[in-house]
Image (cartoon, rainbow, N blue to C red; front, side):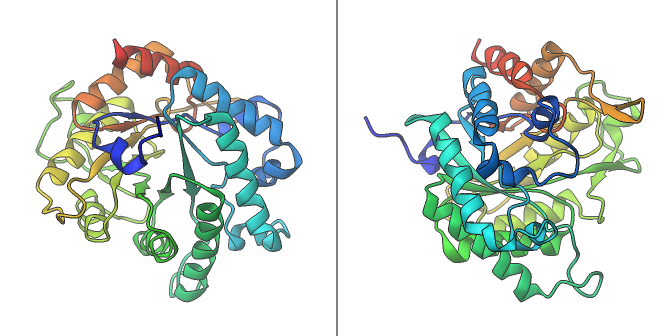
Length: 320
């Protein structure tokens, strides 16, 4: 029996994503500052082992190791000429890990610069860079795309538009949020806490309302959040806000619905000997992801600080 398309799978109500890639690379001794995407060529077994560990933990899909595999980011490592090679290698590794039944999602992250006038990037240059990466991922055989961990609205829109210009597969959009100020509403979990009452913005000041409005209009298949600097109760409150806004969106008939994606960190990190340490237990992570799913998120996984153990606890909790 042929695997359902990712678009079809999204209609079933729950898709388990993977956990952190960077956390696992550091655990395997990869030096900070190294071009992690070049590992697809130089050390493919490391990336394969990480993907397999998440599949074995219960993930339905893995993100390719291509977060910084656009030509602008790769140029900082002198690798701008290897965009196609690096992205194709990443998809090959991911497909080897997922087999015929799971999904490979092409991962596209920020360029590390800003568009003019805040930065030096021209919109056409940035769009061409993302289109080149997306084309390489599409031709290599991904099932869909994730535009993730963006903080600037203009760059995220350019990335999503670039993907759509070269490929018709589903595109997910995920921004990184922080807590700001205080809003009158309170979360149904731990209501009354300052965390539950917080509003949310990206580092560049982008609101949840703007994200939902802009990317629903662009035809994203899923919209949500990952990373950020939130505690778990704040991630829950953020989920509630996204869910409410998405429920009010007038979705085009061709899209049917827009799914809510949630990939929180493993709690808020603590600084230990100059390093960020995530101390949230597997069980507590699973309990919170259960609440986040019940609040409306149907694509769920983990970002920084999460491990295959966190994902296994999550999948077991929700399957039970």
